[in-house]
Image (tube, rainbow, N blue to C red):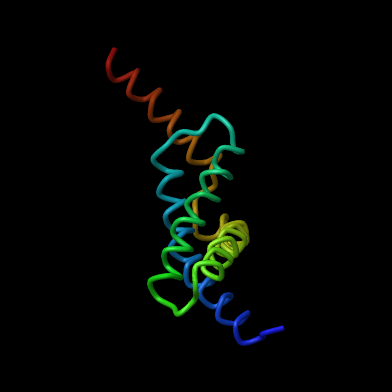
Length: 111
């Protein structure tokens, strides 16, 4: 087993997780998802795209290892998000509640 390569993939994935977590948070606050499973799939796609691109651009990893870094970015981003959701990020349910409250307020103001 190549421990140095594993360390490099993990390091790139951790760095990429910062960007993917922020991107998913922005997507979450801007788009209303009917099901939370949809958000998981969007998160996976964003992580694979951003994580793989990040690894290809900012490391010496080849495409296969960059894909692993992208997948690990998703795992890491999900774990980081779950751990910090209540402390730093707004939970999805809170964002939805705020959107509904704002919509109701706008309807009242229009009348």
